[in-house]
Figure 1 (cartoon, rainbow over the protein chains, first blue to last red):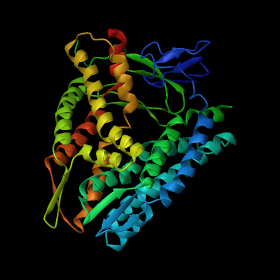
Figure 2: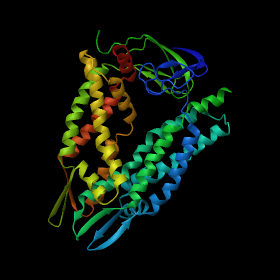
Figure 3: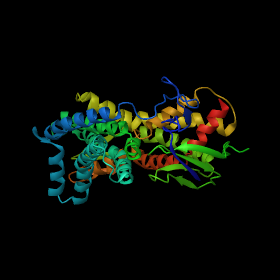
Figure 4: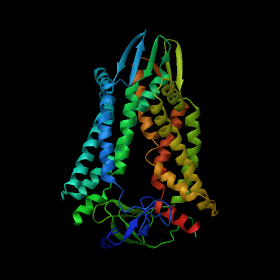
Length: 205
Length: 208
């Protein structure tokens, strides 16, 4: 393998984001000659898009945690459960393993993911040259783990479908579930709109 | 020429992580090339990729239908019995007014995994049996775009947590749907490992 020590952008080439074919750069918006996807050297408006989605996710994270995700009704007495109270209940019942798993997927991953994205965004906007390789790795991790936060929503959909025993015992989903699902999807879009090549563009200058 | 032969022996590609250009030549099956600057994998040549992925996708499609038809869990409390399928959770969320959550669960646990299987078969079958059909590039682009959005693996973890929570106060048993789902996940992960993106794109470029 021989390295030509040049980026595609500097060589007036565009690597297709879909099939990774190198295309010659043309004046206006063009499509990949191999797969037909729209070509762009860097994700258009990457920083603005990522910031907008990160801020939206942070705002939605509040109702996602304040509102209950489901209500358990036993003999007409309802107890609403938020994500946090669900985790606490698991710990109180001695289910440490599952409690930790749900905590990691529902709280730790979204929070760390948002913090990491903010760090990456700031690092580009303030021209930090610090550890580009590590920053690329951080991105790879958050790109990969975000989807696991859907755990709580899938679990809720299973429990509400199973526990339907009329007045005796019933579980209903609540608004918090929708807000939380939105947080997960928006943080995933935020990660996908970030372009790691921007980290390396700053290093070259 | 077998379905796995690559047309291009020498290829220049840009790293997806940092955009640096690399020239890759004569990669053997099973070998990997990584970016010299940021470490991102540039090219991973797979062994018998087309046959392996095709076999896995056919199996996956059968398992998909079993996983969707048969019950996943059965709950018994004080004489009453309820069961659930992948779809019943979606219906329940919808009926209780959480339409957006219902749509997301439906897309991620049912529709996207199905589309992924179908598009992959649509691309692989003509490559294996050397015939021509239209729209394979679009099909493979759809497959690649939905890659992370099909979430049967995350769904399984949701089932495990639900199982443990419910087993605390009721008797819960496992249905055929769950076994099918577990195998479907193994198949899905295996086929994403055996699939050689570069090879597929090269084949599509020269055939269409």
